[in-house]
Image: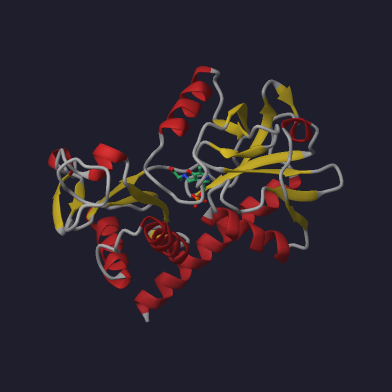
Length: 292
Ligand code: PDD
């Protein structure tokens, strides 16, 4: 068995003993942000989008990038190699650093950077549809910042798990779906319009979401960014979720209302295939480059 390696503030250390200080503000205050990037055929998927969003999240919280973007990108690659990841996830987190516990920003703390990488087999192109439940959205007002303050997401996921569902769709005070606990939410209406909520402060601007919008346009689908209610979703032709670990994951049941027989719908299938085609292309291009 190979031993996993974690990255902690400039050091590559055995995963089992990788740790941060008890006074780290990520631990004390959830004062930090993170990203999850998929690895497919050894390649980082949507890397630039995730790095862009990391910079934006840090900027919003006035935390400095712990190192230059190009250096970070290199370390992500090294982590993929060191952990022999062919298909899986790279996780990276930046916090405001270590300082005696006090709410305002510390005067001189260096940001903490930790990175882990692991193999995880994704469902392939021919995935079965999953079920979702709904739950009130209990989060703060800046859901566009990808912070490590994930208690509402944890409670929502536990509720989904106890109900035997894959994901929990969070619902705002007006009855509209914001997004999943760790994914964006989509429907396809009876008139074949793809709908996902507009990316303002109420949802995370999913990187997978942005790629899917491009694939939808390329395939000539009608597309709208607007909120939809739970009832509209239960009357939709198709539904799916998107994230770095699910790409396009079809949904067949919403709170015990079945919208299909459990198979992926034609629009979901086209978009999921488009994602896998683009990832296969990326891997082929990388192979061609390395054998030039
Ligand atoms: N979750 N919405 C929320 C609340 C999320 O936590 C995520 C990602 C997404 C999808 O974003 P993206 O397409 O960039 O992955 C939407 C990650 C995967 C996680 O926390 O594990």
